[in-house]
Image: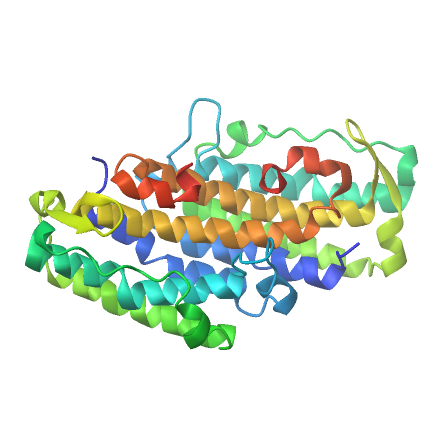
Amino acid sequence: MVVNVEEAVAVLARTPQGLRALLEGVGDPWLDAREGENTFSPRDVMGHLITGEETDWIPRLRIILEHGETRPFTPFDRFAFKDRYGARPMAELLDTFAQLRRQNLAALEEVRLSPADLERPGRHPELGAVTLGQLLATWAAHDLGHVSQIVRVMAKRYTADVGPWRAYLRILA
Amino acid sequence: MVVNVEEAVAVLARTPQGLRALLEGVGDPWLDAREGENTFSPRDVMGHLITGEETDWIPRLRIILEHGETRPFTPFDRFAFKDRYGARPMAELLDTFAQLRRQNLAALEEVRLSPADLERPGRHPELGAVTLGQLLATWAAHDLGHVSQIVRVMAKRYTADVGPWRAYLRILA
């Protein structure tokens, strides 16, 4: 296992500022772009990341610490953000995400995980047996995946416009 | 054609700060990660983006404006950065990229492109006939593609560590 708390936190702590720098003020045509029906726009991704902070990562970490594998995680609703955050201005979404992430990283620090803790078992309602270390690695990889999704969705606005250069742009494949 | 100068610049102007927020201080294990031999680490991508600012985008725009399709672009060496920038500290790479990007966006503003200018023809040494609008769209999509590459390369450090969650993480596919 490569994952450790310090390195994962190095990524997790930077995502809010990275997204703010890329998205704040960039304009609605970029923020509302999507790859097709029932796919996430950059604005949707922000709502999804916020609900993850509210209901997924730290709550699941606490379930593992308190109940181990005896209590499965509460299922995460990937679309729960639509009602709560679908219509909020981007600046507010960026603020909310940054604030929740700060709180959650403080909560993570507070439990002072040891390397041995990363082996502690939990139970995912669909995936079955998991560990706390896998949850931590997934939290960080999930951030990076959604940054990747955001910039991919944005880039695709120009799929036709790049003309023959498309052959060189893997992101438009 | 969707591309226009204002929207493309909205993306191009944000990339340096976005990369700084994601990468500055994140640590060498993340910055030196790579997907395999002869692939770019996040550090390599910064060098590649810098050489693009130096020798690709604005120089090609000027060739189109001054020579149209009569003079093919100078071929771009995607690996030229290795000698010049391979060993520089990340903070310096981020500064250099930000400074060159600022200068190049000032140069772009100075030529005051009209919508009609975006149709002006140029000649790519490999791809053949292109337009100034396609060059501009490609500049922006190229930024987004390399942001995507950076976070993908980083995420892949955790491919094994996420365990069964891999099934949910498209970035690790």
